[in-house]
Length: 106
Length: 130
Image (cartoon, rainbow over all chains, first blue to last red):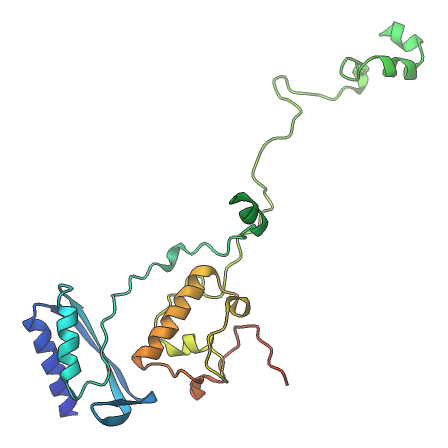
């Protein structure tokens, strides 16, 4: 457990060094991985999932991927865009007339 | 009008167009002045609201593996097509993108369905051969 804390501290410090603002850090729990992942000459079966909410310049991405790749304790790293939930405009299935579509595009 | 009534009705109707033939005053129905007989143009009042798919209004996230596993085969782990899930275009695309992302990031197993989610309610209309 102190090791995970140390890893998180390292990553957050590296992020702040490159000029990113960390908004939130979520722990998604420690579970057994869905498949065995081999990384850094070791086969891993269990892992802790963490999600860091951050804001920063896009030039950080490649630098951080390098940095995390060199970290032995990090099994898999990824940067994901912040999801903007926009599902209130779903209007349902509009029936498409395939015949018209086919004949009209000549 | 009296003169027309004298001659046989059938003969007159063949010669005179129906528009000019006057209906006797007691058979004429009451009509407001200035309103035509034509049907009023309006939208179909019996139109049904458009059909919604199962996920209409639900936010799809790569993190809730349980929702994503409902659209995956328990035997092979492959994603069901649109004709099986019955989702609209947008949602099918979102689901498949989320499933692939979950595969890569190590949230969801690839070759099979997570055994904890095998007893979830069935959404897709798929029939397995017995």
